[in-house]
Amino acid sequence: MQWSLFVLILMGQCCFYMCQLYEYHFIGENKTWEKAQKYCKKKYTDLATVYDMTDMERLNNSRKTQDEAWTGLYNNPGKENRMWHWSLPGLEYNESEAQWAKNEPNDFNEREICVYINHKKFWLDDRCNTQRAFICYDEKKKPNDTYCVINETMTWPQAQKYCRDNHTDLISGLNQLNQVKDLIPPKKNFWIGLFSDTWMWSDGSSSSFRNWEPEVEDENCALLKSSGQWRFADCDETKPFFCYDDEVILIKENKTWEEAVDYCSDHHHGLVSITNPLQQRRVQIRAKNADTDYVWLGLRFSCFLDLWFWVNDQLVCYDNWDPEQKQKRCEMAAAMEKGGDKWVTKAETEPFNFICALH
Image: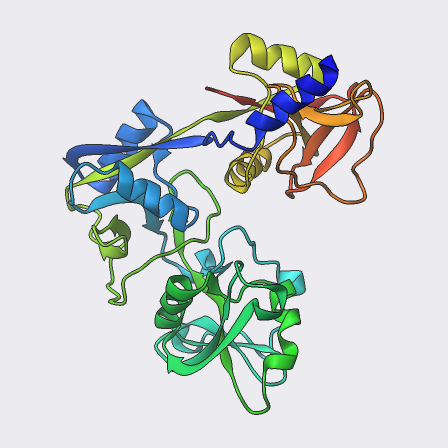
């Protein structure tokens, strides 16, 4: 009875635990982008990185004026710095899975940075201002209605905005594209959510999220407008800015799981817990810089209760297990892959880097 009550108490609090692993701070002082960057790195972690529309709402809610403000996005010109990105946040482009048509991408005149899929299901690059039909992805719809073919033609930026306003985003990633092959009629082409650019985030994050206004300018820094869209701006303009304060830290020391728990408890705020996709992405970013193939998380299996639980007493309401790696065995704990995002089961005695919560 006592243990049943204990489990019910944990379940009651677990799904309401939505602590963010980073916080935004609006700084009302006018500075150039470079001076704003230095300020944020000194006082906080860095200029703000944006991962999705939820972050956009958080930024807008944290601003104290309607002035334009710097984010951490800047341009690093040069064809060698150009990278492919998926429009849908959280997906990373994998060259080995690409399905380019023959002699593509050719980047004709170095202006073809948006991608469409042809009736043969191959990808081709094109100028973003070309008018095409497109396919939206909607994560809130039933499985049979997840994808929406829009036959009205638009430019790639217009198509992206339409999908974000009315659905979730432009269709993105190989898995999604494989599911709509039968929806593409003969002799018809559609924009998909793949694009390339030379823009980078100040903190080195790989976020592919972009929210540009339609007008394109030849400038190298990004300003957030009161509308929520971004504009290209001269980095020497003086504007307010957004910093962020990270709430997790990667410890590059090799420790067993219990040693990692003790270290984080003594020096920080415990071994990290992940209770939603937003936290998952932040921990993924830190894990990429680890010196070991895996990093410890604050998740352990209890033989007595026959369940997985977080060391901060949260039950597992959100998980991201590798289906083949989740095991219910005593003296086992969860780790995250350094170069991936899945959780795996590891013996507590193995030495890995680990991630602590700062608050």
